[in-house]
Length: 443
Image (cartoon, rainbow, N blue to C red; front, side, top):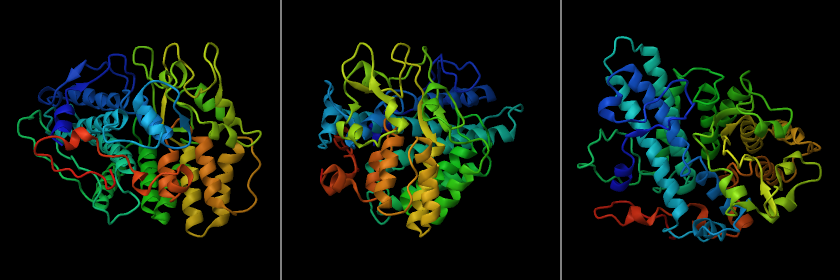
């Protein structure tokens, strides 16, 4: 684990064009200077949001690697990392997997620095409620990051499994000479950390309609996402309902409007980019051919589904492309981390699996009819209906693969061996002298 810590020390890199929070961040903040006053702590929080934005996390690789591994994206390009993923044969040396693993741990370490550092700030103008809010946002982002890791690298479907994650929870304090190696924790312990962070955040975080930062809506949404993976259906229903009933969020009347306008009421958490702080979401889907629509996805759409309109030909390029990220000139394409549609589908799944078929149909149809389709009249073959909606609703957003695994459909649908329900731990992590990590079984 040492190389993760080496790479993820706070030197919080904050892009000068970032508009996550309305303040001018410094270009970099290190622990010994970030937490000396309120201004430094605020800048560190901006840095945390910036750490989610690069290509190695939500700027492209996290979503697109997952979708190419599922039956959503298809590889027609040159980057071998995407090819290995699309072939459903990921080696532990795969660049995409290594890149995302390290990118997520960088975000975690930045969150750790904030959680540990903010309480130490000696500034009489730094009110306790603001300190609590900053720490709560950091805990929410740390929970998001660990859940992303767990649902791709950990055996998240089995709480008795020892193949959870290395849980880095302490700030390095810029001391990289004496970093201890960290073993993998169990799946249960990983879930406990995620839920603990979210519960602590929920107690103090603002119920804000600012969709560009962590809010109470995101915390409850992440709890719903966590509980559905844990198969705690009552808790998943309650958490999802808390978001669905929140007046800050609602399904957009038109599916296309979500992606043509920033920060709509559909979004619970959305990363905004601009020309000075661009994403690479259009790079791999339009300007390059690493992530093209899977022909099976295109063929699967029902007639009249408006979501199909977000796959189309683009002038100057051959073949149909994903166009949720349509701005390939300036790359001002947002990353949609959580949308209200996900909460409807989480609640639909939880209701069905806990015996409430009518409620499940109501939630599933809320998403389905928004897309212009006729509502389902009964719950026959409900799980496959649900997985279809997840595939059509969230292509390019990275939800399909972990949903197939969670619902025990990955082997059947994707034709993969059971051990490939998770990514391999990157080879470079295992090849460090003194390393104590264990590889996922089968790799």
